[in-house]
Every structure is written in C-alpha cells, then in structure tokens.
Image 1 (tube, rainbow over the protein chains, first blue to last red):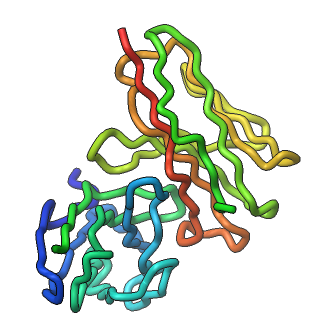
Image 2 (image 1 turned 90 degrees about the horizontal axis):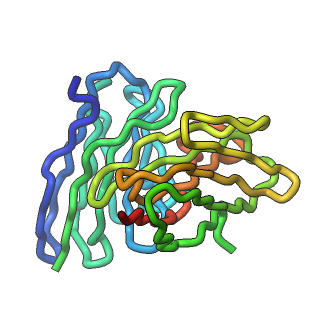
Length: 110
Length: 112
C-alpha cells in the first residue's frame, strides 16, 4: 500500500520560477489537503479539497493554486516562487478519519 | 496567543523514565483532539486520539481537561525509539479535518 505519494522529494527554485508539486493517494479518500511546515510553527493548511471537483482556501493560500485532477490526485502550483515559500510541504488525505500524510517535499527558493 | 501552544522542549530523559507533555488550546468550543508523532525529516503520523474520559494505548496515556483547555500525553517506560517530536492537534468549532490546528510540537530525546 503506497498510501499518499508526493513528488518531488526535494526541489530548489530561483525566485520567480514556477513548479507543481504532485500528490496522489490510493486509499479512495474524498478529502485531500496541502500543508506547509516551517521551523517553530505548526503545520499550516494551504488549500484543501473536500471532494473531487471542489477546492477551498486554507489558512495560507496566497501565492499558491491547486487542482483536484481526479479523486486520486491533488496538485499544488507555485506560479512565481518567493523565498518566503521555502518550506516543507505535506500532502494529506482523509475519509472520516485522521489525516494520512505523504513523505513531504522540501522546497528551497533562492 | 497561538491557537494551540506546546512547550518546544527538548525533553531529554533516560530510558525507562516517565515523561509528560501538555498542550493548551484557545478555542473552548473545540471538539476533537489528537496527538501525532513526527520523526526527524519524516511526515507526521497519528499516535492517538484523545477522548473526554482519557484513554490509554500501551505505554501512552492521553488526557483532556476541558475546563482548563489543555490536553496531555504521558509516556511511561520511555524507549530510545520514542525519540521524536510530538504534535498536539485540535480541530475547530465547525469540525472537519480542514479545521485542524497543529501545535509546533514538543521534542523528546530519550538517551541510554
């Protein structure tokens, strides 16, 4: 069972570059989430998708966009990366249960 | 004031010790409470839910004090493998996992 799979694991971007973080889950969960984790702070919700075809802003959505491509996949896009977006990004899914997280993507923006 | 506050630690304890962490939350209407464990450079994983009456899972005991708005995690007979960061998680009034608020975590280091 793969659970929640994120790619890439690591990425370095220059300011202004764009990229998409991919997330897929094989647990048939309806809800999917994107969090970021910064030192000294708890995980903060960027966007979530309660079901296929819907997305909603979380606590820190500015500078990000998301796509719920189908039930399995939920991608996070940075259109113009900024150093403040240097962070560890976690995708998660749930179905009336606590969250299952992916392994994370470590992103550095220089 | 942060919505969920934890002592960042680190708590350095010898093997076999008993250690307890507290976590305070600001929203008195919060409904659900969890402890997650996060190993260094890994994803968080659910350790246990916290029920109103308190609950135990092996060496781990979780308690909820609604009057004082805190939850606690007690680890007995600490093992080296317990070394990790423990995240306190509270969900908001409207429920749903999109309303989960994570604490910054308490780091535990168990030494021989």
